[in-house]
Structure formats: structure tokens, C-alpha cells
Length: 120
Length: 206
Image (cartoon, rainbow over all chains, first blue to last red; front, side, top):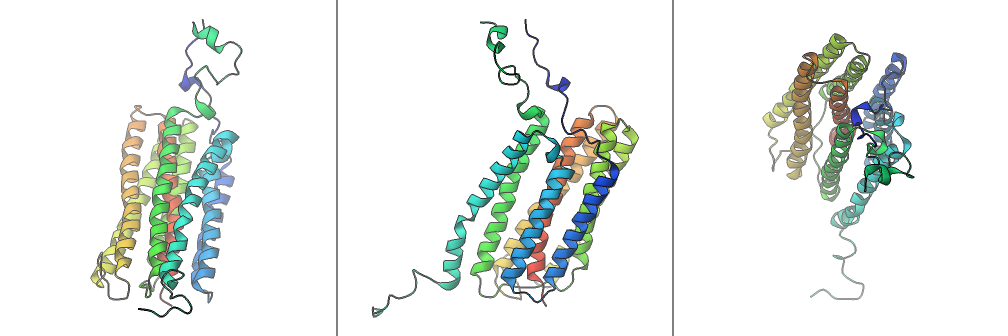
């Protein structure tokens, strides 16, 4: 007879036994990256360039927090891929609305009169 | 057919009922919540970007970064203290884990107070949900809904930290419960990393 599996007896992979120095380094990296966003905010770049740089930094910060503070890196690779790929797919799929946003902004192509057609 | 017949010949973990990905049910539940909540926040931020992109005169009411930088520093530091709490709990240091958890909760309370102070300051300058003195009227709605949703998460996190911390100290909860609460708290911090640049820093009045 096979014993019923006991989840509580199963050894977790993320054991939180990393040296304290590693956590402090990650924390300092996060502070530096956050400070970098503030520096970019006061730079003379245009808004879209600022946005791109800030987004990249925010993704890097999120990656560090996920991997080390949330210990996703210490979990099974399958679990890490499940979380990252599934979430990534949902977040990327959500971006479909941007084209309509640009249409609102510039009015193209639907609201512009066709060439050669006299408006009624 | 007995369970022995079913499991025979199959790799461990497939039929035997071991937790998927070697993750306990509690941890899997919080990760699924985090994934769903990430989609919620992303939807709010995308909707905010949609409005901002389509608006002719998007307000830039922030002239000081003192408050938001303090809030960011406090939240990042509270993430570290939460980590130290879970680490202590896993090592069996009960009082250390409790102390770090309470410090984390105190950080969350301080963050919430600073947040409310900022809201009151903006409200006193004339910003409402659907009107403001600076430009596009929907700025208030998007700002209050995104930061309000985050503040709600922080408040919920502080309550959870206090309850789980106290129950852990009394022996009703274990280190795994503290770890699960810690994952939620780190997620709240993670979301703030996206809220700050897009909602605050891109709206700085030069």
C-alpha cells in the first residue's frame, strides 16, 4: 500500500539560507536603480525616451525582486518558467490597445478625410 | 484499482499527488494571486497610459520628489526587513522573525501615512476625481485609482503582517505562513517600482 503523500513533509526548494550580504547587495542595487529613475526624470530627454528607459529599469528592478527577494530563482525551473511566461504573455497581450490610443492622439487613419474626397 | 496500481510505473510527482513544481499549496495559491494581481495592476497602468497618450494637455502637477522618494525608500527597505523576518523564521529564530515582521508593518504604516499626506496635499490644490486646475480632467481619476489600489494593498498587507506575525509568535502559524505573507509584501513593493516612474516621475513639472 502506498502512503498518502504529505505536502508538509515535502522539502521546499527556497530555504532562505542565502548569506545576508547577498540580500544587502540586491537591496542596494534596487535603491540605485530606483535612484536612476529619478535622475532620468530630471534629464532633458523627451517623454517617450524617458518612458523607455524607466520601463527598462523597472523591469530590471522587478526581475531582481522576483529572483532574489521572492526566491523565484531558487524554485524549480518549471515553476519559474510557469510564473514568468504566463505572466509575461498576459502582460504583453494587454498591449493590444495602444494602436487605438495612437488613433485617439493623431486621429489617423479613420478620422482623416480621404484625398480627393470633398467633405459633405 | 488500488493507488499502488495507479502509481506503479509512473515518475514521482505525476500520479502520487505530490505538489506541482514542489511548491506547497499555500505558496502556489499566493503565486496565483500575485499573477492575477499583476494583471490587475497592469490593466490599470495600461488604461492610464491610454488616457495619457490620448490627452492633449496631461497635467504635470508634481514639483517635488521628496515625498515619493521617501515612500520608495521606505517600501524598498520594508521589503528587506520582511526578507530578514522570513529568514529568521526559517532559521527558527522566533523573536527575531517577529521583530522584523513588526518593523516591516511599521514601514508599511509610515508609507501609508506619507501617501495619505500626498493625497491631501493634491486635494487641497484642487484635484478631484474628475477635475483639476492643470489640464485633462481624467488625471485625478487615473491617479487616485492606481495609487488608491496600491494603498489598499499596502493597508491589507500591514493588517496581514500584524495578524500573521502575532499568530506566528503565539505558535498558531509557522515559518511557511510568514513566507507566504512576505511574498505578498514583496509583490506590493514590486508594483510600486512601476507606479513611481509612470504615475509620478513622468508627470514632474520641470
